[in-house]
Length: 471
Image (cartoon, rainbow, N blue to C red; front, side, top):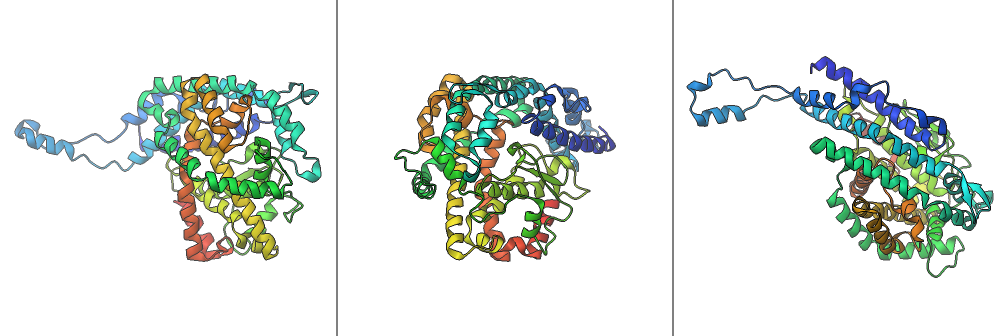
């Protein structure tokens, strides 16, 4: 495949990535997208023949000495000295991207069905009328002042959640089948990350005591008195605080602009607030992120993660190939996201970015540190359960019953898919997020060491971050 063809293919991959991520985000809110094929304009990108053509397009060995004049040993040595292929990394990244898109298109119907199960309204005995999981989850996340009483919504979620399991099992089954057909190339998008599973189990064990202490504080702050916290209690604790407790009244581009005032951190970068929390994970190749309206302090922490992730994905230099800069299941955006997210756990951030007094800044930092830990443990639970889901439904449910009380509180078996299944893009992305924790913390520490505790408002730090994101 000619270099010019590779350049054209790279541009098409960037457009296709934007299209499929936009489609996935819209599925959560718009049933009209169920009928769409986001990759219809680029059929070659999902073709196995394209993947094979890229793989065959490397440089061939060119020998200038007739082989019959060379002893066997010299023939071997000459063959080993292959010419360097300057596009080898690009070709490899393109194969991964085309495999990812092939997989996404192959499981498209299952992805639509999974989104519909969360979006469509069904009867709920607890709620007394038809409702959807998505509506109940949004209502559960509302601030206390907006009528966010959790228990009635939680009961409705428990009514409706069992329907999710069939769709998730079907999607993972199809993903596994396609990966088997693709062989070695399909492993990047499906194979269970055994090391990440072991890391998840260790992380849960090592943070049990810290989590219990944080939950106890969060329960008292939230005025909840249950002796054995339920999944609802932990949800309330993870939300951390209502908007009225010193947070801005709206999560907006203006809030981010004020955060980075005096720096070039957000130069050329858009922040849009939309209507659904499903848009908190930027992936497409355009300079912007979509955020949900705020439902509590943790919404702002998650927005910081989205900002760091988005800066890496969208910050590439024009000469840098998209395929290598932002490959699927890439840990680098998540590492930067974790470094930004860590700000929410520091009193300096709350004092200087929010302008609150020291005692309140320290309390906010402590509560959001608990939220951050609980969210990490929840992700670790999903990573730990991925191999059980790959075995069969029964193994997954039994493992959930065993592990869930330690991680997400007392939860009925009916919530296994709701709380324990992989995210919509499969277990590979969950594993990468888990692996990004330690690196993100280390990078955050590096920013503090180099640019001080309020690095987010330091022009030199902004230049350093944007330069890192461009490469």
